[in-house]
Length: 298
Ligand SMILES: [Zn+2]
Image (cartoon, rainbow, N blue to C red; front, top):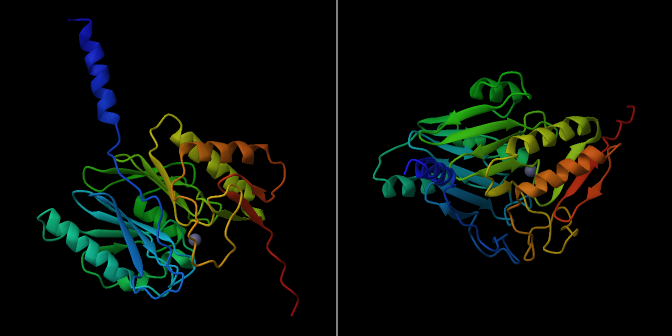
């Protein structure tokens, strides 16, 4: 009996670490091909406290993904979408449904951004006057102040939504304010535009910053459960090494949204082996280094 006890404790701790399950669709609507539908957002319940919203390609070819995560004290919205969408309406409808299902009358909302690019912040103005809502401005100073990042980008921060701890991992490179979010409850890692099945854009002068960020992200997930790595876009097709051209709205044969920890380890390994910034196509994503063009003299 005495010998069994430690074994029991051990199996209990493994059970406690098992991530809360969720499901993803085999395919996402992208909007189209003729864009006669009215829907601006497609909503998927990953599980009853974790939702994924995808903006229709009929409103904007970027068709980004947004995420809404509920804790017991507050909800967190990751990004506000690209142009031409009534994102507030979609989020409000979804939150009303959650409140009803949980027999509650209200829950505070925190709006944060994976990074500051226009295709992820376009809906911010719609949340400016929303009651019980904190909108964290999409700039590095506001992000570090809100989350209490010390020594960005070397140290992570945590945010508790109420029985739901999130780890925030700085990953500058795509932009100076990019960070990843790891939800300990589901073991889902949100990676914004830094890692997704598509073109990972990084300007050549930021390449070293990007490389270090991926290395830090790989170190962070090493040894942790990772159920899904979910980014902000899909640009890859289901055919290895082939992506859709920029601006494609209708993508019936697009790659699945989820990547896994192995993609981050692969990306890290490839980046560590590169001596100069370059475009590198991998099976499920492309390192898309861009060289900013010098301005012509006036
Ligand atoms: Zn983007």
